Image (tube, rainbow, N blue to C red; front, side):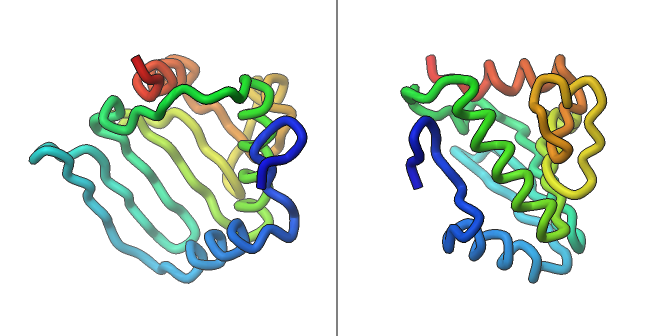
Length: 138
């Protein structure tokens, strides 16, 4: 739901609850996403861990939006807390290299100063920055 300043994930949000409960039911597997005959992403699922490896991140570009950095950070914090509350970990990799970890297994150190969250770990500032640039439209 769109909150005052950001896409807000309410504690009782039925969609967020459905997504996290659905993720919790998966015990293992792999999903490969092919776009224009090119392997664009792989999703590895193992118990409570989900790794999203964006092999061709530029294929997942999103249109520019009006939300600012802090608004996006608030949404990420809420989603990461929801994942942690449900015992789930979601990792984002850029071409096989870890960039971000959200949820239960996140162990932030310096990134806690930036995110103000116990549930978001910036695993690699370099890869996170590259991923952000890759996903940015234009």
